[in-house]
Each structure stands twice: as C-alpha cells, then as structure tokens.
Amino acid sequence: MIRTALYPGSFDPPTRGHEDLIRRAAALADRLVVAVVVNPNKQPLFSAAERVGLLTEAVGDLPNVTINRFEGLVVEYARAIDASMVVRGVRSVGDFESEQQMAQMNRQLYPGLDTVFLAPSPGLGHLSSTLVREIAKLGGDVRSMVPPGVASALHARFGR
Image 1: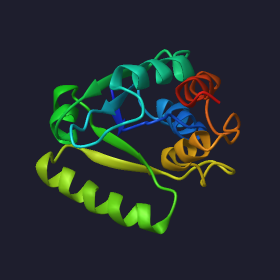
Image 2: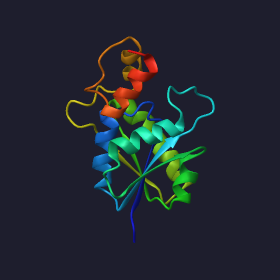
Image 3: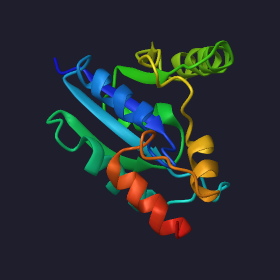
C-alpha cells in the first residue's frame, strides 16, 4: 500500500520553513502532495501558478513530491488523491490549538485521514509568509528566509 500524505497551504510566498517541512514530510510517506490552496476570498501576492512554480523550483529535486493547486475542502482533495494523512506545521501553542481543531473536524468528515503535526526545525520557527512579504515590501533582505527563486520573485514584485 502506498502511503500518500497531503501538505496543503497558501505558500504565499514559500519560505525556508515550508521547504524544511516539505523535505521532512517527504520522508514520512511514499508520496507527498503539496497543495497550493486557491482561496477566492483572498488576494495573494503570487498567483497559484506562480506559487506552484516557486515550490517546484525549491523542492523539485524530491522524487516523491508532487505540487498541485486545489480549491475547496482539504478533506475532499485528500479523498481524491487517496491521502491517509495531512501534514501541518505548528510553530506555537496557538498554531497547535487551531490545527488540532481542524484535524478533529477533518477526521470527522473523512475518518481515514490522520493529521501529523511537525514542529519547525531550529532557527525556522519565527518564519511566516506574512512577515516575509512585509519585510520584502519594505525593502528588507529576505534571502535567508526564502529559497533563492522566491527571493528573486519578491525582488521583482517589489522592485527592490
């Protein structure tokens, strides 16, 4: 039986924290699907296609990782790809509380779906896409916070 894991997120933009989590999650499953969430209620900095491209550039060397986009409920996408687990990163107690609630709801909607929580690797727990966007927008150096392709894309987007 092939174990498929799903790592959904907005990844706007992908950070070193996302990259680290993807690399570690890839070791937990036979197949890892990284799914860029398309939320019509949000205005992302990068389009879904751009985020898929940035992630592909960052982790495309991993043979068991596929990067897609999706809309709708995570559990429906998980069911469609036959995932048995959802991978979620938790940086803080607040993250854990909200992720735990979501995990329980997902389990109710899709009883075969478990959630695996991964804490960030040392030195990455402070990273968030929101903070990275803000720093880049204000002209700060984000090269240590994001993969090289993302740093270039942010530089091009903000003209800095």
